[in-house]
Image 1 (spheres, rainbow, N blue to C red):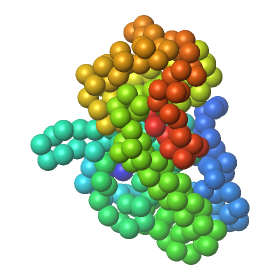
Image 2 (image 1 turned 120 degrees about the vertical axis):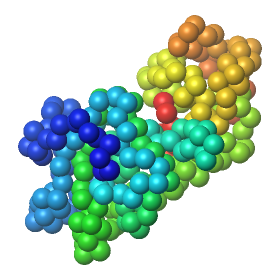
Image 3 (image 1 turned 30 degrees about the vertical axis):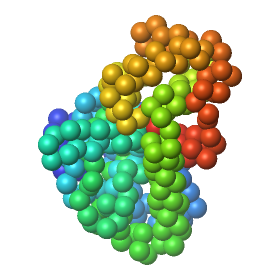
Length: 252
């Protein structure tokens, strides 16, 4: 952490609230001997943060390996001219950009918190030393990196192989599936933010929604009624090699 959490309260590991993922439940720690886990957690703390908190800036060098225990973090990229785009969202039990932590290199993205969230913070130097020393921990981190790589490839394929309208249609189908409501999807954030992750402008997002009105949807503010899911799927052609399990970290 880089001092961005100026007013946030630190919590001891035994003060976690109900609903949080406990550190020992994290895939990162599964299979580790109790002694190794305890040693690593001696170099860790839990942070509870409020919406709008900046966890780190693009260009900062990591002081901690952050792991999402509850809530989420949104990762943004920014150009030299100040244009900002949402790259992806990290949710429990994700490690946040472990590649930067492991290589002691600057973050390529900024992380912001959109909702009340809690994170496990492991001191970066202790984390690197533990990964070097413990094959089981190294294996878990490699698994996390592999998952993030596959997720990013799916996202790039979504951006490069589909039209804006197809991207929006597949997003709505995935969103309704995640929300457990096949007949509707409720947009969880403002349209500008969702459009940013889909690689389009807000205006293009609105035009795509309007176009999909001919393919079985109806827009009512933040709620999108899916009147004919088969027709919508025929229009946007979902693909399990793009929209499959690894794609679950789009902002939905």
